[in-house]
Length: 67
Image (cartoon, rainbow, N blue to C red; front, top):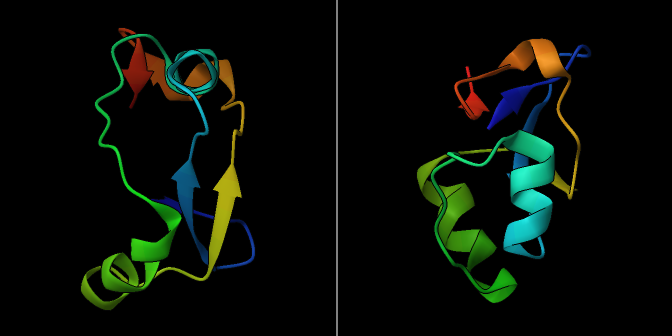
């Protein structure tokens, strides 16, 4: 989850492990989840949008994962 500039919360989702590593760093923790289960995630941890395969700015990545 990441806070957006406009105050919304984004759930970061990656469609492949190489895209996760490119976007968040090679040491980023991950879990596999089918998109059909996003409602269950949202019920436990509310979010406003899902952002797929986003490249995070380098200043947010420390030691191979999001800081």
